[in-house]
Length: 218
Image (cartoon, rainbow, N blue to C red; front, side, top):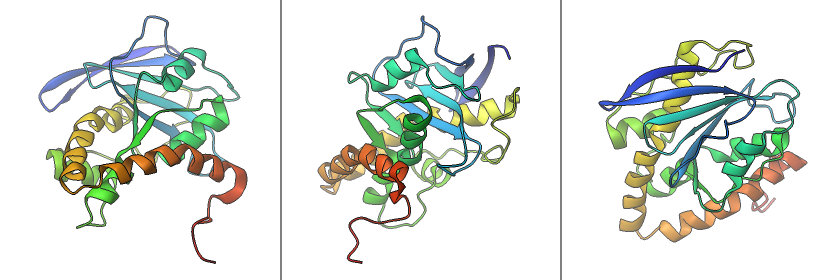
C-alpha cells in the first residue's frame, strides 16, 4: 500500500487529498479547528475495526490516514487529535470518538459535533444527517455513494478517497452556520455543554451502555 494524492473541487476551490499509511507524516501541521471523520468496517463497536481517519483544517489540504489491521498506535495522529490547541469538529462524533479511543488509544479533545449542534439549532426538522445539513445550510450536494463500501480493503478507490475527504471539507462552513443559529436562539451554551460530555458518552458506549439512555427514568 502506498501514499497517494488526488485533487477535488469544493465550492469552486481546489482541495488536495493526501492518503498516508498508518500515521501522519512529520511535516503535516494544522491551523485552527480540525474537522475529523472516521471510516470503519461497520457500526459495531465490539465487532468492526477502524479503517480510515480523515482530517482537514478548512484549507486546501486534506489528510487521510489508512489504519492497518491490528494497528494499535499512530503517535503523530494522536498528538494532533489530543492537542488542546485545536478544536476537533465531528459529525456524529460519538461513534468516531469511541473508535479512536478503542483502536488507537486516542482521547480526542476539545470537540464539537455538528450533528448535536444541528439537533439543538435546527429544531424545525428531523433531518440531521450530514448530507441534509450540508444541502440546507451550504447549498451543496454531498454524495453518499461510497458510504457502504469495503473500507478495510488494502487498496481504496479514488471514489472512496473522495467520499472520505468530502465528509470533512464542509464541516468548518457547517459549524459557522450552526453557530449563528445557536447564538441567535440563545442555545450555544447548551450545545457546548453537550460537546463537553460527548467523550464521556463515547466511553459509556465502549463500557457497555451503548443502547442505554442513562438519563431515562426507567
